[in-house]
Length: 241
Ligand code: PXP
Image (cartoon, rainbow, N blue to C red; front, side, top):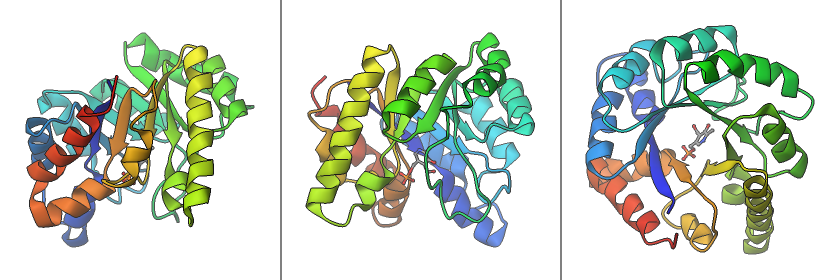
């Protein structure tokens, strides 16, 4: 059965507006765990626009579920991952000027680099995932890298302007899931998923985790964090195995 993993970056985004202490993403992470999240995701960006180094350190020490660290494939981030030892690292592309992660990682053609980059991380027993487009070449390249998981980018699906376009994007994702599973990869989905569009994946087999941040933090403003997480966890719990 797929599970919910909650991204708390945007709790930190609000805190960084004032560069103060509130709201604390660590508190959000602990509440999310109480409400049924099976893991917590933070993206430590090069520009530290939301999550800070001390957030990662505290989460690594205090989470009761699993810490997923999203990061760019840089030397700095590799050292942080080795020091903090999250459950999983997810490699993402990063551009300073983007509002959020805009596209999947280019894996095809960089298999050797990514394999070497991940070697010390795997040697520490940390799992890895590559955030990629639902594209055959990228899925095959991810399998060649030897990481156990991929995360398929659902942003184009979420942003599709029409129902037909959304269906087309969904079908691409479903095909990529099938291919990835046949190559032995675990599959997570993330980006732009919300309380409405998530149902499009209700009957899709082979999904391990849904990685969801913005829609949960947005709802939490009105309902409280625990309720927002519990509502999403309840939807996903009804999806067939
Ligand atoms: N997965 C990845 C790789 C991301 O970069 C993000 C956004 O930080 C998410 C999932 C979560 O996306 P959203 O905040 O739109 O739910």
